[in-house]
Length: 238
Ligand code: FPP
Image (cartoon, rainbow, N blue to C red; front, side, top):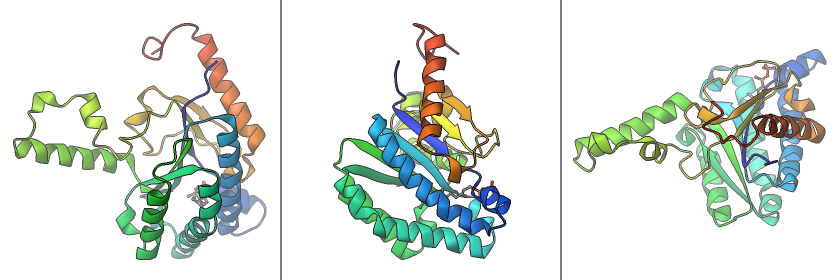
């Protein structure tokens, strides 16, 4: 049966993973970043085409300054040190979210990495940073409203595909499988529009413990669900 084409992951549970071990929450994020690398390597090997990771929500800025700072430094180190490896592996990297809220050097790193990998075809990693789906939808609505007000389009021309084309995910296939680690069973403002037909998978495993076998199990569950629906296509199955 089909492997999902686009897997999206809400990487939750770093803080609790650390607290359980008597470590500072930031230790969980550090191990979480290592987990991310392992999972990306494995996802590429499995033949997944696109993987989107919720690494920082637009709400996460409200966390204690020290925790935000640790996350920023992790992004910085990760983007700098792992770039060569990503390029060597032919991985396309792009970002969704409010890029302008990050420090200038981080924005520059993001822009550069997107430019350097823009033509890679095989495996596409999308990092959601300072991302919030409602905000993305509002931005799309604003762009469309401006076009309507300027007379470039008529309201009746606005359909689903036109709307989708104005989201930050416009160049991606819709996610067909969404995983959330850490035990909560919520979508938390992640890809709200895009998730309309996605299979959802929740696991109590904290993100730092989510390993290759855990991804295999999740994918196996996704494929088993699809088998149960037999020959029916996505729309019929609702
Ligand atoms: C949620 O756990 C996780 C985050 C807010 C950050 C995710 C970041 C990483 C996995 C590390 C680095 C990423 C990159 C791109 C290098 P939580 O802190 O909400 O955990 P809790 O629910 O147990 O408190």
